[in-house]
Image (cartoon, rainbow over all chains, first blue to last red; front, side, top):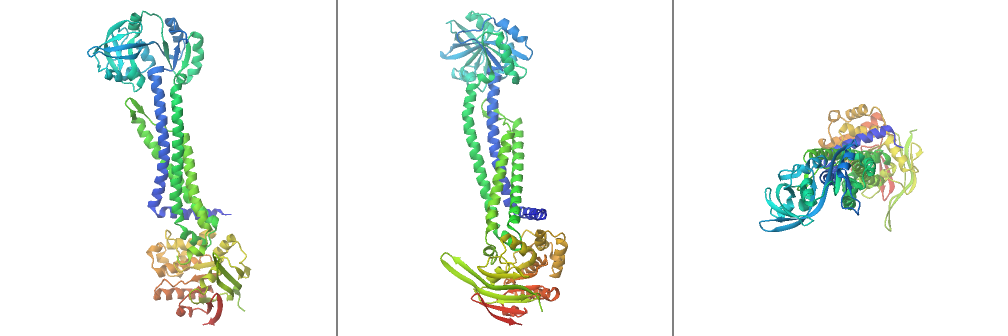
Length: 393
Length: 227
């Protein structure tokens, strides 16, 4: 059994041996650090992307909660009354009733036309719930009471060669048609908005469709997003419609993300295995090249356990420094990127999200890889016949 | 009557290479007294180094007994042998075998540190003074000449006050001047510290500086020659 003094001596030798060759030392540390960085960074990017997609959906489409009519109903009725009830709930930060319909938009000069989703809201109310007003690419956002103005998604505008100030004709679902002026072009970074959406005010929509005090949906923002389930139960008795949280409204995204999750998990696993193998090979070669030193130590009286202790300590030094350095670099890069988001695509700015749990798991796995990779060749070398190695070397 | 420090009885070593067996030692019987400086000589393949490996507990014999200080060391397991080597035997190698990353003093200290001695550094410096290298204590092996490295190696062999020093052709890689310095140092240890030394050498001139030459041929002792 190895004693404390032997451990001290082993640590002394491990330190000397580790620092003997700076190039190897740096190589192992950098390899370990980059392996860790690779795993942590890819996962952080994925988490950031997912968070951003959720945030975009909440901020530009669903709010925190959505009330919709029963499946057999076209509209929610008595919206003014429902709004009052909802306003009475403390913690409700914004309520925006919307009409959602289909319409045909016609560019008049070249008679280009396209079918699109038509969404009608009261801008001042909508601004309390979503951040659509921040996504104006050109022109201005709608104001309350404007009946002849529309907003249009940028892709749809491009397809129809439309710009701010252009006049278009819209044909509503009831067959009524009317001319509008494009007041603003939206660049939301979300395909359903940019490619397929036109926005008008509720006042204009109600006038042309001849509907009043109704809505296709009501979107709600809460002061605290984490309270959505509690509020859902509070709101259900206030309406005959269906009450959804942003989570249920984004289930399609979640399903998509779950399929990405499989890919990400596989990528992470392969990343960890590749890193572990690379680390193992580097440390294995490094330790294997120490046969002569091991034989000398054995010859002068070092026991197998003493020799194993030296290389275990070396592996611990490599492992700890590599992981520490890797985490510092990862944290530094992620910190830097927090203020300088990466554009995954136009309109979608991703801030990587540091996953502490994953960083800890990857650190442990890489540390154990470094340890195993160092101990195995040392164990093998410690078992070799001294005389073969030492005489005549 | 002098104390017998090392005794071998019918010591045999057979190496197996596949189906071929090669007998390196064929029943060596020898006795070495405390404080004796013995040279082992013989032609290449006579079994000199194999014998040194056996009595230095670096390799296991196929048959026979080895007594060091009247202890039957041949039956010891690897762990016990390592401990015995550490405390009772000092090695001097042909190629010095110092650790390159350590200074001269650290190389000398090393067996003492492994043993757990608290005064290894002081003792290492004393031994470096003894071998005439105190001023080179902080130099690494690459900064020392061959002769100096071998003297550091001798100081290392002495750090744990061994009962026996085993030197395998310690002068083979040295010029004649350095070789003579090394052998004279071994003689000094024998004369002043009553150190028992077993040295394998090819050079008769150096062998004659020992108290006795044991001649080996075909793995057997063929002659004991008192100088």
